[in-house]
Length: 365
Ligand code: NG1
Ligand code: MG
Image 1 (cartoon, rainbow, N blue to C red):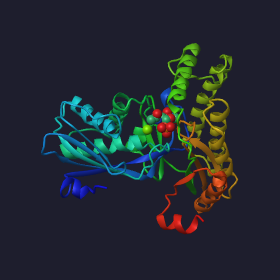
Image 2 (cartoon, helix red, strand yellow):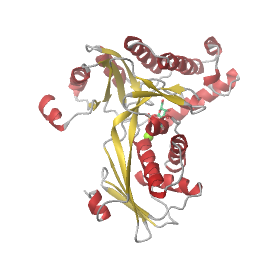
Image 3 (cartoon, helix red, strand yellow):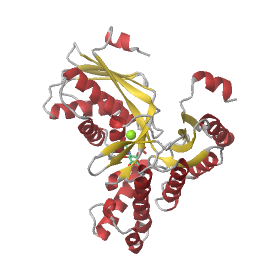
Image 4 (cartoon, protein in one colour):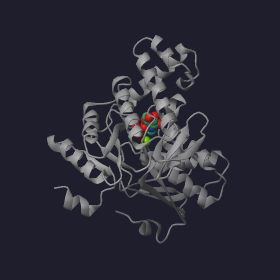
């Protein structure tokens, strides 16, 4: 593995970082112009930059131990380089001159677990570019450019939640986001709350196609209801007139937005847990994006002492579950749920609270 010092032959010119995110409530609402409540992860991605002296762009990922090199009029091959190249090209499109750069990336945000390592990479890259080149870019505009990098260069048709969260959230607050206006505010976590995130170990292979299918179903439901987006449904009963499966898809989105608005207004830890459970059942039964492993993992988490609610987080079809519990219970609850879940050869793993090496070695047996 190449260290930052050896990659740059000394210290880089600048260094910036950005977190991943875990969404506590408000799933499949961002592309419906709705509301959500993500929190920043303790895991972060760091991007270091220096001007290149051979006229080429060189990107190195210490996590993948891979690098890409290309000329200024060329482009990065598909992979981690396209996220970085997208950020550079879109900053250039804003009128900023970007010289050929050496870019070093390091992350402890798990890739492919639904904690949005891609948004962390985009936001950290844009922060590093802003710092090095000194252009004006507020944090909301930065999130928009990051989202465009993902859509146009990494070819993932994502909503705005991940990039807004990575750009503006912190670890000890929820970030309330209105995906239509991009209005946002930090809201305190329910009093006495601790977060648990466990990766189910099931990769989200179907996510691409089903994700887009759900987006299309929501658009069709909006058309039939005569609204611009499901966010605009004012009478929740009106969705019941839709044909199947649009009725259940729309019901999920409309009710999920109501749950977020209630939670963002400030509720007890117990009530927040109920809203998370309701979100999971709605994602399972109406939106149909859960899988048996996520249902089981959530049920195991709910059964632990101190846990008030659990749900799948992210798009579904695999990936992670998030739970809220009373302060002081997270470690024990997560370990107990994981031990049970992993009994039949499953590969579940704790993401939050972040396991320390020592703890993993000493306590997991
Ligand atoms: P995940 O599954 O965490 O990557 C995806 C979308 C979000 C949002 C959620 C569902 C991407 C990159 N992100 O998140 O914008 O729509 O699903 O709430 O596709
Ligand atoms: Mg992503």
